[in-house]
Image 1 (cartoon, rainbow, N blue to C red):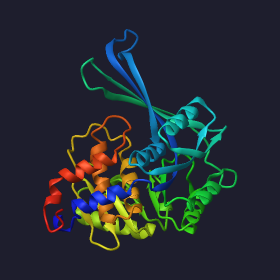
Image 2 (image 1 turned 90 degrees about the vertical axis):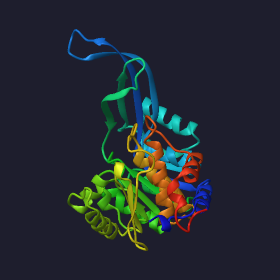
Image 3 (image 1 turned 180 degrees about the horizontal axis):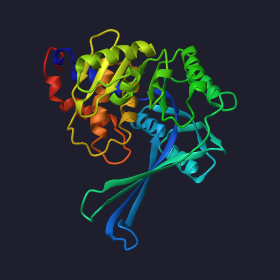
Image 4 (image 1 turned 45 degrees about the vertical axis):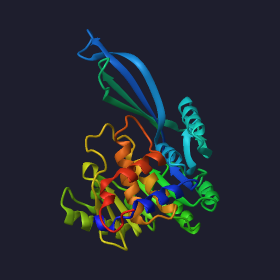
Length: 346
């Protein structure tokens, strides 16, 4: 595999071309909250810890994190999605706006509560805080294909953007009534479509690429894959055929990721960095954002997968819902010893 890897120069040039790429991000928008506390004592009312609150962080989550990752890599995301008419929606739109993300086509739904994923992290004064509980709230009914401004916004923006990233967290924006018309509108605009879907991947067809994790790929494949590379190869080929996709990237946690495309044999990339991760929150959003930007910037499937693998390895070493910058990708490319082998050496 090493001899087939692109050179450092080629990868660095691909990173350079990621800047300024306009991406339509169709996404379930979530606010991530992280409550940090120090263990004070055990309650006398119940056998539970009492925490002294230290701080609360609020960050773009769900599909909003995908848009944030596109922006952190110097892309230009335009978001289509919904939030509620609530303080949480105000906070999430303000966060995205502060990061320079276009939210002009996000609409407010009075019957919807902006989803929040609230995580409580605890530890002693000088220890790393560990997540002890997560509480989710918000949501509402699936959007109506006729009433919601989803398809109108997508049709308006398909032309001015270079591609579309669909981030589906099964929160009602994307469902059997909207996925087909959405994909049709994007294909009519002639734009590449990148999909990250938590539970509905099999409903997307005629796409450019998808980035399921191993469990999501197994759900579509219809059986366990595990560490069996032969079964993984069959699953990747069947998944690509079922979705009529140009490429499938299966993320495999500590085992790295695997690329399946129609023009080459499967490529299995080992995990970048260490498998002792700090936090996997939102790592999938980072992977698809890097892959989409690299491909839209003119990279090959392999170049995009390599950069996405670097991005995923970097982001899981950060705590909370995090992003990766192009400078961090450049550093990874310049220091990865795997790129020293073979005729592709820069």
